[in-house]
Image (cartoon, rainbow, N blue to C red; front, side, top):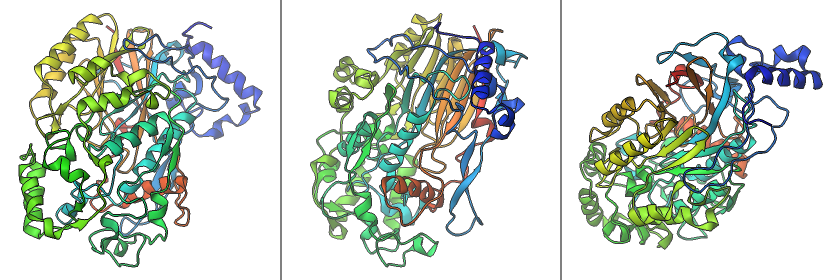
Amino acid sequence: MPRLRSAAEAVLDRRSFLAATGAVGVAAGIGLALRPDHAAQAGAVAARGPAGAPVVAAAAPSTRALAPVPPWTGTTLRKVATPRGSASGYRRLGTGPGWKRVVRTQLAAARAGRAERRTALASFVQLTDLHLTDVQHPVRTEYLRAQAAGAWRPQEALTVHGAISLVERVNALRGGPVTGADLDFVMTTGDNTDNNCKAELDWFLRTMSGGRITPDTGDPNRYEGVQDSGLPLYWHPDGALRDADKQRGFPRLEGYFAAVRRPVNSPGLRLPWYSTVGNHDDLPSGCFANAGASGYLADFAVGGRKLLSLPVNDAKALEAVLRKGSDPRGTHFTDLLRRETRRMRSVTPDPARAPFTPREYVEAHLDPAYAGAGPAGHGYTRQNAETGNLYYSFRVADGVVGVSLDTTDRGGHFAGSIGKAQLDWLERTLLAHRDEHLIVFSHHNSWTFDDGGGDKLVALFKRHRNVIAWINGHSHRNEILAHGSFWEISTASHVEFPQLARVVELTDNHDGTLSLFTTLIESAAPHRTDFTDLSQTGLAALYRELSLNAPGARQTLAGPLDARNTELLVKKR
């Protein structure tokens, strides 16, 4: 079979499928199947073979046959988790209507007939801000919740369950929602872990590549975090305490701690996957310079004391310092911890909570135990480990190249940074692939740099018009910006509601334009929760509902409609 087929040829295949299944007469009742604004999904299914070999060593993309189901099944085009009831109190989730696709023409006109002409060039899935979290980690600052409600999230003990459910959703996709073409790979765009902790890194790599995970550290026989502390500041799901969250309607769930700490199994992604680093992966607490295996914070992380509460004035001062990013080396923070030793709770020391260095991050990705569907190193090479440079390029498909950046400020800050050496390497890479389409991945977006790096990157990409998209995360909110010659696509996190990931498909419209189709997906967990179901799947559903109800949770993270399911037109150079 030739690698690319026209959409017009694919229409015949779609009609043949409907006829063969007896669905032609009822197709209009399938929801999105035959709507004019979704003609691409209904009649433009272009098939293609495996992508070319990546620049770095990589396993071949999946070539499994597509099952006879509409390719947009399992996406937010069809349905989406929707709050029920009033906005006050604890809200349950149900299933609501999907989000329509919005065509955006700021960079190029949408010409008639493109759905019949288009061919698929590449398709992939972006995951971002998984924040797999060791909720018992001593360096965490949950006690700042008294000053900033979002400083601690009640759902964080379920991050592994939610991430595995997202992997299950990706595995169930039957090709790109628009083209129907095989998905080439999955890319994570950082904050894969939360506390720069070796245990969390193991959980992340096993979630992505497959394996058994015990989402627990410290004493294997009991939970030792803030949620059984007796402090009403935190939700105590497994106790009778009438804490602040239960007063808002949060449930009591007997057996919760035993359930969330049980081993779980991840099937691993069936697709090759690549990794981009974020500030929470590189830096303790996502904002302190990483001293590796030495220093006070490294010792405190693996030690036997954990702070659960702070006097009001101390909490206010620390919250202000962290919000401003004015304590890059953690001096204020470590001084506070030294002063508060008597207030701390005794916990079980655990070397698995140790921070990891950039080199150790790469070496873990290179470990054959985490190979999964490949490629070896998931984008990183032995050279990355030796140099500490966590950026690379890779082959996406014929004529399409991906670039993964490291935008962490290693001096200590949650905002992005990009130095001259990486910028020079990036420009050389763009020049080397001047006749191909480039897609750039990073954790930070253009508006969250602290050194003008966002503006520098935008200017660089405008000079090199082979860049068609810059894909990132960090802000935990869906946003899509037009930058003159390329699109910046920022995707919501999977730790805060609405817990989304994004499918991106690149097509050639054969009229001087390309289209980038973006389609949001949720995890495979059911929208409705059952408080008596503490199974792996039931906890993944609870994870989503708790994130909706978390005090201080932002209610705008889904972003505007034109940043959700879209067609983004761009001129073909």
